[in-house]
Image 1: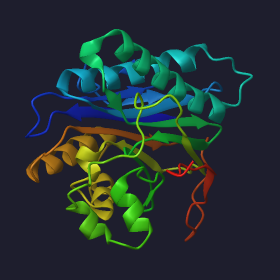
Image 2: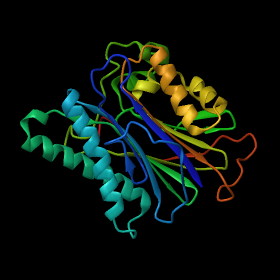
Image 3: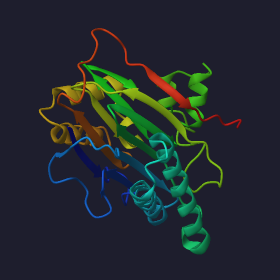
Image 4: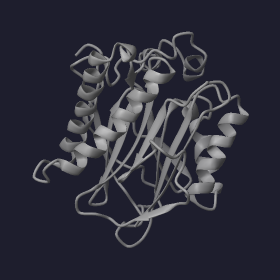
Length: 282
């Protein structure tokens, strides 16, 4: 069984909310949060979670992220099951990219719009994470947290090259520059990774309105201190807003329970399999 809660918030600075989320067959196109934590059975067809952060001006950014989650939802519902699940996730993001480009092409007011997308697919006790941009996915287990995604951003390249520290990246003047986004160009490279899920794990997806103001270990402390996913999401958003809420904040939190998932191994880090990576040189 998977228990999920999701919420999106405008923050304290922005005039509109350009974020959207997807939980199974539910999207944030008409709601800001699920009314309560929802339980979903493990489905042999797979289960999807997604966050998308729009860009390109308030109206256009909101349109881009809404198109992203709707296209992904529609694609995953219609894609043939004979296609490998992880491939379907990547194809869904590429379909979203095409949809955003085509809409911008035919509507001049939407030209330049784009969106990030971090899409998690759950199948057979495993999570596959497909990513375009810098929205993040984290795995939380036994009080610890691991980042499953790599920010496809200018400053993250500097961090990984050892040219600046993570602390310096947080205040870098070019920290908002991402290296690829849905709608930005015809050809994109979807980053894809996989990790085995265990009983009592959490999977956290969020836009940078959260990850940009709350450090990784603080995220874990809030989640593990909360009584349920709804309370955890609400406290995460409250804390981001308490720290200034400089951007829209979207959080999707899934908890994995029941005998379908094996207990986590003692004192072992999860094995995060990198299937494909984004490189700016490609």
